[in-house]
Image 1 (cartoon, rainbow, N blue to C red):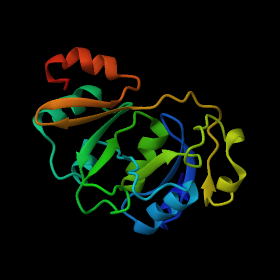
Image 2 (image 1 turned 90 degrees about the horizontal axis):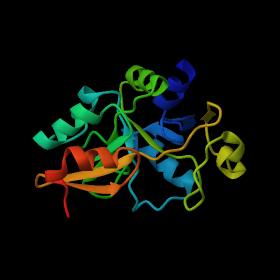
Image 3 (image 1 turned 60 degrees about the vertical axis):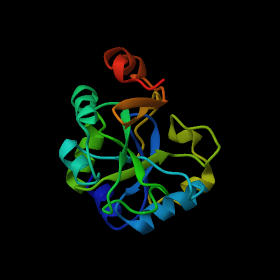
Image 4 (image 1 turned 45 degrees about the vertical axis):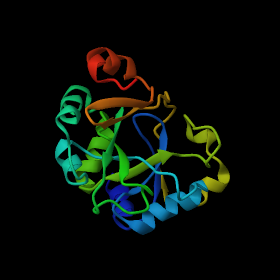
Length: 196
């Protein structure tokens, strides 16, 4: 953990197990770290990347506003496999997203919570693959060219890869952008707020 934190604080990038899949991670406030992730993934700079935060308090430090409805959903479904599209502030690297929004998740995972708490800043966490290639559930599937570009790799064994549910809340309406694991619960609980 200490070595991983040191590497991330230096603006380097790592591959680690997350609560959804293996991810390439870097300091979301560091322009050079974020640019490196785009470079090693061969990802178009016009595509946004999600970030992880340790808790609601850290979330508040990197967004411009949290609506009442967003607050209710955060209370009900986080920490967990829910990513919400928020309006980001200038504490987040401008390279994380080409538009004013960023997907943020509070993971329910001991390893990630400890990492984020000790690092005390958000991390970009995008799937550990070259863009356009399938996500991986074990490091045996990692492309050699990607492995050579990464500063640190942590093997967490074989993972069950389930993507997070991704939602956007605008004008008191919830749009489900990616179904994921808990979309059905949100649709049921917040039926009156689901955008058609």
